[in-house]
Length: 257
Image 1 (cartoon, rainbow, N blue to C red):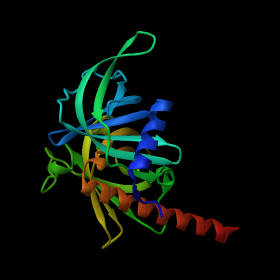
Image 2 (spheres, rainbow, N blue to C red):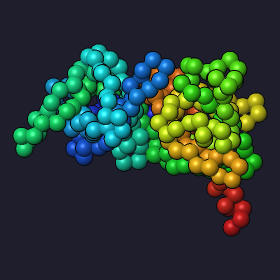
Image 3 (cartoon, rainbow, N blue to C red):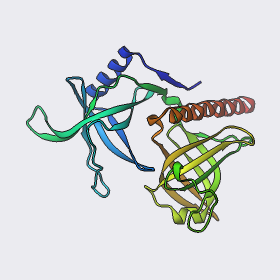
């Protein structure tokens, strides 16, 4: 079963060293009120117990959030067959001199002392089996802003989840949701895995919206799950469900063979 594994100090050091050696892309998730902002970066160097990340210029607005020393951020990266996640403390932002003399903007973080990893198998998108139902409800502004009841000014949309991974999901919903939401919008999401089964809450970023006949398909990316124990528990449950759905799909293939 795909689960979060707590890494030892040696494993953390090996993962960080490998990420730096390969200049692995990393995503830095920053909490902002009830929402989230993500910065894209790549591992650059380890010096004086600090992890230096080269910031990748934003292709959107170009406006990056201010980061103060001692602020906590979430960091995730993929390495080999695992997704690694950890929370880090910001030590500053500055220019970093490369060997060729060029200077690049970097984010300096305290070297992580705790890190978890999730099998990349969980990041394979799995279709929800025909005999299972996963429902999604979502609203603007993040999970902390869930309306007590839907209204024209604070709508809550709902739909059926079509496929799921530890990185996000795709849902079928009505066209009104697709018309109201734009890629990049932050929404709160409630996922319910069948009648009377577990439900989880998460913050998500809308990735894409596509009209399909009278309905619409929306893609969502989970954000901030690495920031809290609650988020880690949510990711653990999602990974468990993915493994369960994969077994159902494999059993169906075996029966048809």
